[in-house]
Length: 284
Image (cartoon, rainbow, N blue to C red; front, side):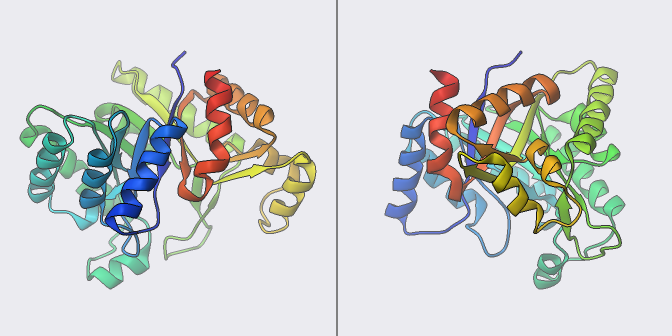
């Protein structure tokens, strides 16, 4: 069983001093990886990753995850090579297909179909494999569909499970939380694919909310009232939520590592402080 690793995905921009301060704070709190997403209204990935590397000493830095459709593969390889060198080999390159149609429209990029977006990601991975010299970054691929999981099983060092699924009937990229039973099935599919390629990648899960409370049932009922496809019992079992006291949340992560194989846990920036005691508990 793998040891836990913990990442934080930074969502809000700031000045150079503010960015450096929050990266150093995350390092002090015990986070292992400092990450940035790839959305138009959020910090630009590569400058932010480099600033995080320059502000800290221990954590790895990376993207969680780049929208491959926004990037020409050859030009992306150039940026990745420079970032890997300038971060002294600490780069973790996360890639995905992109899913928010409004962002494609704003950028003037064809949204295409799930198939064409995965096609482009596959071409990107082939080009990166051809062009990247040492120090080569760790590759993380995020997704949930069978083709995406098979691609990740073949190419990735880390498979990031989204814990989400398209809203039935939606064509704009809207997603909703997946139940634990659905995630069980997706993990089982990934394990079949990794066995096919005789590989053993690390499994990651993104925690959408960290809810510190002494009344888990009441918190779950409140969350379920805003998600009409989930019962309170299903909310309590969600692998993408942590609900309870510090000890209860640590126990949840131990059980999920056993059940799903999730040893690499990422939280969103708003939870950076609330999640820190859980890191301390798991390492204590």
